[in-house]
View (cartoon, rainbow, N blue to C red):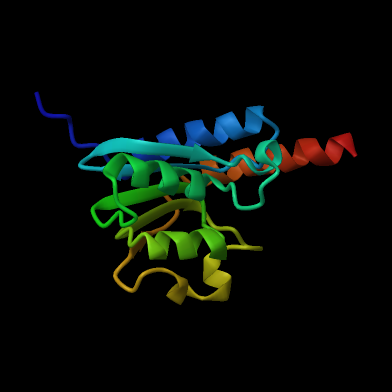
Length: 151
């Protein structure tokens, strides 16, 4: 029986589930999923604190997992869904992996790739912006509001 066709909001909600996992671990709550043939093949959330690794962003975790799943460093038939606009490092990784579709929730007005250069992505990458933007923005704002209360 074929899988039902899912939409951008469905996959972004799955990325939000990953962001919640990061939140529970006291990590900046950003989540990502990678989709291939309408199926989630990889999930990731920030693990920079837990792993003591500044490169352990949600997108990097998901790209590594998807590459292992597919058996290739190129993810040319995949889409990546990220709750927050990728930083330049993650946008570069998305570009190097040649992921043709990037879907993100909320803009990152301080460190997002678009502040630096949209040329970081692969030239053929299609970017779909602000899917469930309010929900994606809300989890980040809650996280940092709690952090400020504890100071």
